[in-house]
Length: 569
Image 1 (cartoon, rainbow, N blue to C red):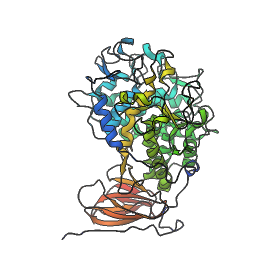
Image 2: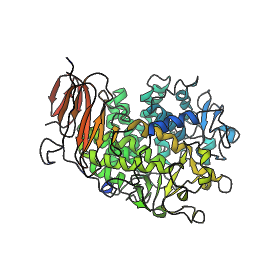
Image 3: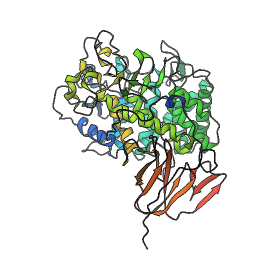
Image 4: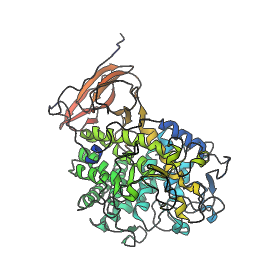
């Protein structure tokens, strides 16, 4: 017998009833547009696929192309590694400069991860294993035995941070653990992952709750101070790697280390946000509170992440505002530099930890859904084909980007001070010419490394039948989470009820559970369900193979050994 479901799902229960999760606001998100304008959601998966196809072309034609080359210096491992430009035309890079050695893990690893999130197999692409090439960033020759932003100290001072700026040393390891989850059988990765976990565990033990340093020397195992201000949010990066290592290896020392690092992060008395790591602290507060019964202050960590109240990295956070008719809310960077200066890579990467936290703490579904709508909408403006020419520093050079390379940032006023001063906000631009003054060309404002992370949006974001209602995959970047059941967030930003057709990723018939209302909204569904979502409310939908048995254990809804609701009453 066949069943056809057309289900109208209404959010009619007041937030105070036991049947629906009371939503918790994030103050910075409340300052963002309810419905950003102009509203245009581009196809981010298509953009990610186009980036990979266009950039990973060693025969690409055109001035400044190709953007990739092979580095045969064999640092750390006697194998070639692909180099990729940080910015178009960067004079420090390419096969003819610095022995071809200067390329950054943030660019290379970000591009591999981004492509993997849109289902490109980077371990076997046109006869190349780009995943295996990433081993060269594992700095065993120096004795640090962790992933670093460059392959060797010979190019350390050219830029990009290496052995002196903590987030630059920690973040490649966060990226590595994500990539390892996508390629668990890659030769040598398990041993490198274990080494990284051991280094981070020992470093946390040595630091003993005090992360007020510029960086940590993982060779000498000493915390260090220099002219770069202290970065206590490095604890979030340590904790993320250690918690992932605990999930993978089952070693309880790593869980203890993750908790220790999170305690160090939480103990800060002022906002410790520096660059990219604080959102991972928020994710861990959400996931560890749910899975481990910890009690980290998630609200405080989300406020630190979003608010723009950082002291050392003054004003670093999430932007909110409308500049001359353009909503730029949700993008990430400095809230104070020239009135605001946000960056594409930071915006892409913030989605990685912040979107999946809704699985563990669904009371933030509305806030994260609203932020993501703003961020996804505004981020197209970094690309020259989507930003009006009168708001770009280099509108005449758009062709050099081939439609896949964006400006590094977007500012309220030109940060070059004496250049492009006639442009009105928002101003699409980049810092490349400042890195090598008088030598780097104007087109180095186009960011290859930031654009390479586009697959994070590409893997998470899908459009629905209603423009502005996004379908956000909460499993896509929940690396090492229990992702057996497809889980999606849908947020209605409109002041009226909206109907959409929801089609889950599951094959076969499914039962659909809504984490917000704590009810199954469909049983034995085979084709899709029509939802009616109330104004400015969310649905978090989990698709479970039909007929699976449910158990409630310790106030958690369990489906055959998998927890789908951590706070079930």
